[in-house]
Image (cartoon, rainbow, N blue to C red; front, side, top):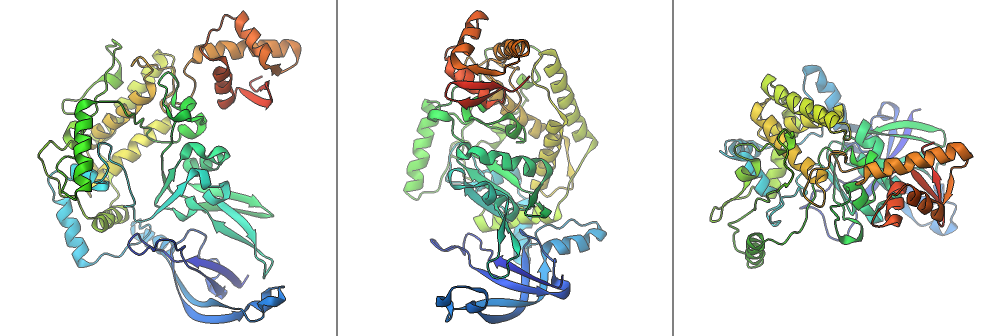
Length: 508
């Protein structure tokens, strides 16, 4: 093949984006050695000649005779990923290349020299948000989508047919466009069936396509930050995260960290929050940034690794005390700093850091086996390693230290305490680490086991709702809401709803 047509879209940062205008696109024609020099999602610089084509040539509509389209006849293509492969021989791993001026490098050096850099960057991420710091659009490459207006093809990749040439063309979705960057997904709970499209991208870091005779795989090395609301607008601690969000355990287990943000009344916290909002509206410089939210646990357990509190918690070190002033890093400079860290810094674990992570992982494994809880797998160990390396990269260090590993272990403990806690504040280890599974797991196991026995005996795995209720009554299974109990089994894949009040057993 010595001819190819591609469509490129302008790459705009936040300061260049105009409200109400979609990014401009233009077609490019590639010939000879330029063919297959890029794939959807690549960042490219095209040099060529702008030409005009008559729409009549490729259109069947006679009304388009006077319509002319611009296209670029490419002479050269500079691909950032191509530069990555060329420089990999020297041991460098450059992703999406950014350009840094001398002024930028001096500013990055000054930021790195700050005494408490982690605290400064955390409080610079989103200074308008109080209490819970969040990641905003400071990544060098980021894509934002909303769950209730997103389709599967809009997330991954779609195959369309070109009306003029009749050939099939690949159109990249949000995960491919966010390659080596961040994809932020809002209203994650309202995506419906689109959750399945994320499984491969979050596990393999690629998206495969097999449609209309086209079989290919596109890179999707994207960090996903998702925000979801519980069903009914209220989080029920008696249920797991999976039950609250109506989300499968396969997807939840792929997230490194799951945080539960509850709006609990607190007089001191509410007072500081109201002061912060008023100060922001009045245009004053903020003096208070965050409040430590402590977790209390009524369960008396002596050996649980999650309840061991460090001498000086990370939340205390990151908290800005009343009266202290933080001068946040400007948005554009913070973006440059993060881009520099991603492009040039690749830390390695020190022996001490590796030992801290290994001890924590082995203790979790031992605990999960002892308490008959959901298994802790190597996926959690890989998450710990990734986060520890990122913690060292934040401060532009080539080696991840023991202190980095201890910080990440503390963050992981905080995340796990939130997903394991039940409505009484006790730790329910029959739930999984990321909140998947069911809150009344033992009851569900007994119920599904009884259904399996009946199905094997009668050779029928279809049950009416009244039959399920009768079986539960015979087994003396008492739940507060039986419809929600059956719905939870349906969400977890044990039962499949075949019609009104009709369910099929899936675990025979």
